[in-house]
Image 1 (cartoon, helix red, strand yellow):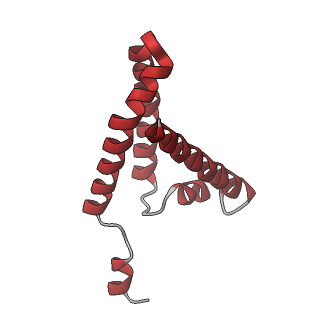
Image 2 (cartoon, one colour):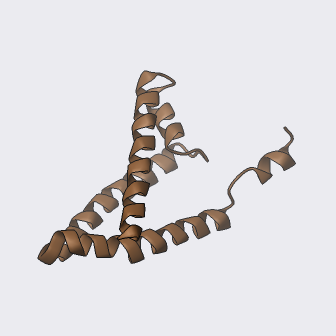
Length: 113
C-alpha cells in the first residue's frame, strides 16, 4: 500500500473533532442529562461533579500516555503497548468492546425514553 492510499484511510483531525463534537452534543447534552436528572433526583449536581472528577483523571491519563507513546490506534493499541500482544491485552480489549456496546445500548434506551 503506497503512502497516498494509506493517508486516505486515516481519520483526519477535522473528522475526529467533528465526530467527537457530534457524539458529545448528541449523547452528553441532549440524552444523558435528562437520564441522569431522572435517576439522581436532587443529587444531580453531585453526580456531575463526580463525573467531572472521573473524566479529569481519565483525560489526564490519556494525555500522559499519548505524550509518551504517540499512536493513531485506538484503545486496543494502547492495551497492546501496555501489556504486550497477549491474553491480557486481548481480554481487556474485549472488555472495552463490550463496555462500548453497553454504553451505546444505554444511549439508545435514553433516546427511546
